[in-house]
Length: 592
Image (cartoon, rainbow, N blue to C red; front, side, top):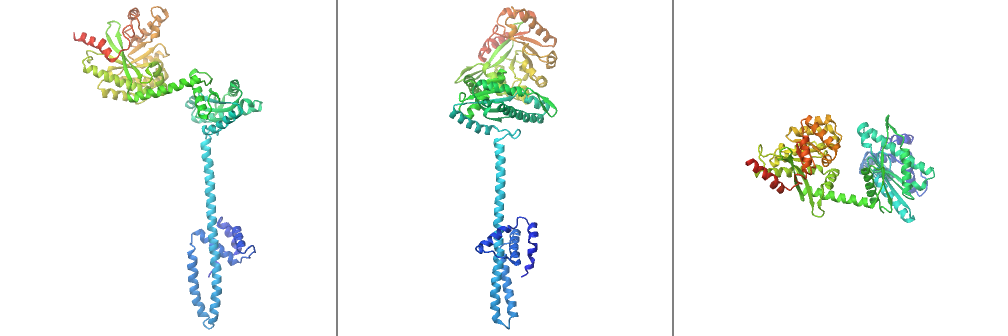
């Protein structure tokens, strides 16, 4: 055997340094101590070599079977050579082979034992590496699950656990827990004007200032107003603070301190930013006895603060009931729109004031719910705007109106070029935000076999001013496709003459608030006269809404108003009523 292939003891340290982790030398020492029952064994250079060989072979993947095969082959050839050398002393052959077998057995045992021990160390090391990776991943997952990645504050999940713990303390000790929702009103504006990087930097600065303010309150001897609390970031622009308070006045004091701390603008990336805030507040156990209930009620209170433009709003049960009723109403409305059940159209005639003849009709939607009965448009139209259902309503109304118009045309009650009226359909400003809107309308009318020129789209002046440039571009596109355009409720908004010129509308509808007392209010007369003159300057017709008697109709006619609509002529009618009272008589007059 060529033992010199293994490193000698003088090279053991350098070899171990070159192969870190291959051999736990102290571990081998301990193992060999145990095999001799505590007696120290002086390992020879050869023994150390064999241990090193075993470790090395384990690392390079040489299997233990190699040892037995190699040594067996060696002994076979060595015994033949030995017999030849000792052919004159055959009695010594057995003695030498017996000694050699013992030495080989020791050599193999050492190598295999080191091999096995190194493998066990590798398994232990690998297991330790896996455990370390698992621990790191667990900490990372916990960080993502319970902390906000931007600000480092607890997130909604961790806030929930902490609030439940605080609620248990409140129940046990009879204390009051407040959950304060804070919303940054102008974060979207900041993101849009200065960029999201500035917005993110601002959120970090806001969280730091909130933490500093709360800590200072404790240092100032006000632990009763913010004790046992936790601050969290809930969503993009919303933070929540849970803390024990003696009463609602303490909450107002806390909010006042936060507002005072936020009075100084933030300097973010060279920009000076002032943060505007709103607060929704709940008090437990009065407003709820679980985190989910408190969170929902705090969100309701914050929503109400937005609606009222209040800075601070406390939750109350009546408010929560109204919110739940609106949510239920929204679900019922969405189901009605999807299923097409309970939705009906009404048609209110529009009359030429000069001739008294029918010139059009405004299409109005009515909704009958099997559980709620008739629901007023004043309830469900604003709700649809708020919940993003108004686009479904616009498309549904236009499709139903297109179908009804085709029925009347097939009956001969509307004949292009002879018996012609326009059906006016209301359009929301939100509809104009949808790039697919125009194509959807054209497709709906094509499916019903009617033309865009048979319809007039009405958009309120206030809706136009929400985003006038984009609205004007969409209206131009709709007009190019053949739709007539009307500006509804004119005089109640703040549109400029420049926008009025750019819209290129066909009709201005004068709001009923200026029309109803026209014969008694000189200021209203002046406003109406100005609107009529302005419309004529821009080549538009005018229609007065809310005409309730003939005297007002006659006065509007003298002032030059072109068309009228109101109870003086007819209330909104069902399709059958409108057909019988107006279309049939008009068709008869034309035929005569």
